[in-house]
Length: 426
Image (cartoon, rainbow, N blue to C red; front, side, top):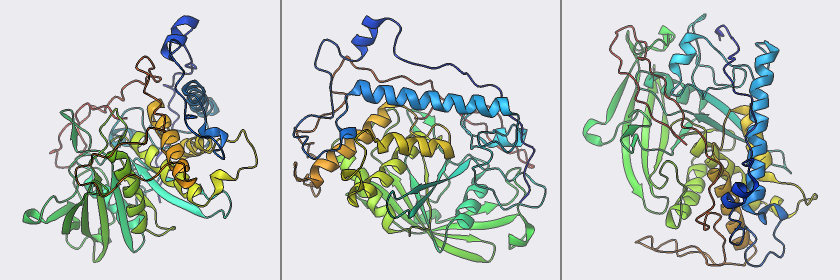
């Protein structure tokens, strides 16, 4: 496939964020006047050390990940090398296709659209591969931003070509949250309007004309059935995706229990775990699940990390580690960020991964019993033995700036696009 000209983006801030310089202020943030909230509440026998850390230790590890990420930006900038692993494309067409100014796929670790020779093949989507620590079996995902209006055909084109016999999409955002657009409406909602035509000329992406059944028509998405699964708190749609003369089934999961700037709690947390299992059951190990929120880094990265680490836990790998200082959460987030910038965007999301793993570890070891996941009203509560890292009201996780949306009209030959709304995402 043709590759657009790559330039290095030099607008990267290279300063390390850390705890406040004022020691007293730092202690207040970490809850100095009360017991430091820890994951180590309850019986810690047989629990690996990385799941018995305090919030200050997790805070420091998140800061280390942020510093490593900033160093990558700087290294890629100074190298002035288009083949550098941290190179960023500065082609105007690439920038216009991003939902957020600062969230882009690494130039040398991204999905390439199948387009006409010499055309820009960029889509803001990254292949993510995580290996089983013992068997070395590869778990495959695609992390991507929420589709933008004017680029829906490009998204579905990617789904068709990057999936095997069946496609699986996990959507972790609503189209609108708090009055702001997070993702375009890219799939049919109900059987009254069951089909969505994919226009080949809706954007600046030039698709191969051999895939078009008729001029200007790339394909069609048709809703076959739609249900709501209470256990996973998800709308599940069975879609038929046709590109050219070929078609395949795509399972679409829209999770309703994870608002922006929050983490799933109570029955929403159990629903997320059910969604992880259910979406995996629809996709084989070599068939990547396509996961997105709005920017495709925060909730998306958290979901992928949990999917991988819960598989590691189920296989017993997290309970039988040779090195007591090992931290699979830190290592997994770092591996993902090498493949897509900013994965697990904020500290709260990283805390959430530790919380879920500790809770599931205690269940596996028989320290706590399962919730009543059949509860119709979702009234079950977490075990009192499990520490919640944010129980301390005076503890504030490291803040992150809001992501800045691209404020340009989607470039189309018909000039009929709608400008993107400014909408931050975690």
